[in-house]
Amino acid sequence: MPTICPESILILSDESFWVGLRTKSGSVEGKLYLPPQPNGTILLFEPGFPGDGSARLDRLWARGLVDSGFTIFAARHNGTIINGEYAGNYLNCPEKQDTITALDRQLYIHDRGVCSARV
Image (cartoon, rainbow, N blue to C red):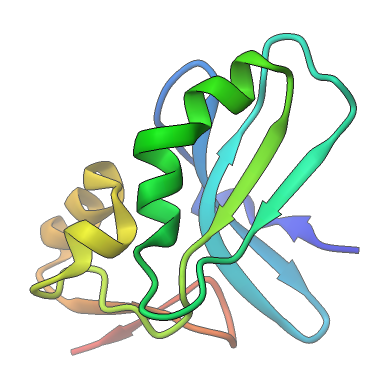
């Protein structure tokens, strides 16, 4: 059963959050949407390659799905450079990128923990 890593949580709005999920086999980060009136269905979205599908989901469909009561977790690819040249397109989460910029390091989403610093 996945658990939310408390240290990973960023509040983005009343109903959306950046979170890291951890299991015995690894971890993943992404956006979690919690509808005000849940319909009991959780959508788990993995973007595939090249990875900007989650950002498209955020921009085009998340609002309508949340308004319809769906809980959504939209994963981001492990290994994504959070402050890289194309990170804005793949992450679609300036709040997450701002936390990294403040650290002045290159951070990655990876499969052994929530984030790992590469100095």
